[in-house]
Length: 310
Image (tube, rainbow, N blue to C red):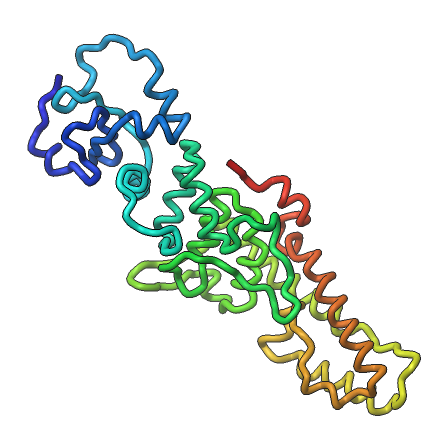
């Protein structure tokens, strides 16, 4: 047995139970917890504890308690151990660091309860639908319940890729590509005392996707009006030109999901207006079908098949 040194005492972190029967060690920090609680929540820990250990007098212990060396970020492990041993916050108030720890270690150690909770907070829909849907009255937007997010959701987007929540990526990457200046996509930015940067794979996806979004919108805008019931060809042709002029607004020309602007209504006769609105919605739906492929993610069906589930 190795007696606890002053350094080990200093590096003890909460949760630390004096009657705990296992010490987990990571990044030089120590947590004394209960193997029964861990085993009941994680088949990985259960198997780890049930494996016969070879007799080794030199195996490290702390005050007679066996130790296990892990290789997780200390903050992630502390969050998960606190949640399993002494839960003190409601599901509805989950910060991004907490959701990240639940997802990372929930996936690694197959802690189904925490993984599900992290996913529910991150995707904002609680897994009620298998894939996001295109809103009928607005452009796609990221719906999430987590707090402590950075301005452009770089951390959230990186996390979704890391833990296999692929269904979040098309809208997350689209939102960044649409709203984020190019230099920030390339260099990152400082937020709340920390530097936020996209992972290389997400950065590449955004850069490629920006160009493809412009092409999608350009294709949609240049579909010529062909309404056989038109009542005023001159007026409606001028209306088309007005729509094209407005489409060069920075918030519009890269957004194939822009909805019809009611200020255009007076520029068309009633049959052409109805036709043009239908065409706008068809174009938005077609762009939605192609959104994942614009960011190198295949189709929505491929995303559904390849997303990680626990």
